[in-house]
Length: 327
Image 1: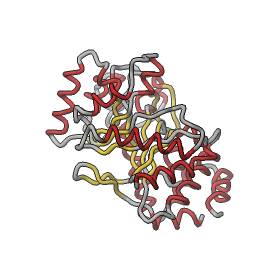
Image 2: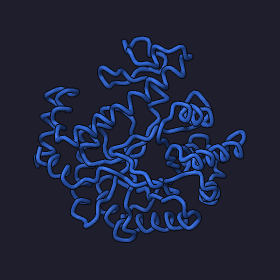
Image 3: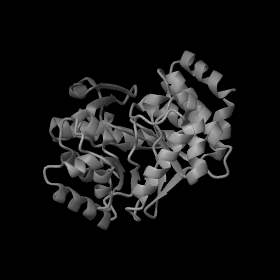
Image 4: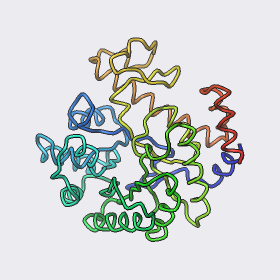
């Protein structure tokens, strides 16, 4: 698999944030008010209590919290304590599902100006111009406007477009901004896993021709096997809600319904604890995800990606990957 070797030689192993270095690839557990069981503030406190070193929050959920001042105050305290690295998204996901049409860029920038995060995604247009050049120009304007409201965090551009024009849109964006990172929703990468792996691989090949390394963040990627495969395809960071929506089988890296943890014969400290069901399950999941990403990082460090693929995937599927990565 020539691509794995070539890309391993070119990819950056760390991303600098707040004087720290995030080891890559990295998964940010997401907090959201949509399709989850607890409030965003409750999830925030759980993540803090479990010493999770990095996670994603929604600007919408901060602004629409029962007590926004308290939420902001605790986020400020997190930064004062040099605590977890906080990535903030635009809140468009939540506003769409909750059908809050009042949420706009002005509201997003008002939360951004509170200086509660270390990284933030730009306010994204999910229905952009089909022309990739015009699309990129609009993303540049959005990113620059939000960046002008804050100097303590980096604003990361998000590209929404047809996957057939993705390379063109991202390269146009980079030409205009020299951005260190670009963020892309996983759902636009293709209809199946092979197609999505191919799309990321092709984008990474294109970006590796540039003078500086450009990080790829995938929005909404939290399935463990997808994290493995899309990391090897060239993505660097991810966020997803799976850690609080499902429960992971640590023996197979597959996901079960959140209420099915007892079906998993796991000897982790959280499963053996006296915590209530929800906290046990969230702790179990976080423990897995942090170890899982460490496993992927270690394989990359030692050139052992093939061994990891053979350990977790069917040989026939690995052969399909070889077709992509031997080109």
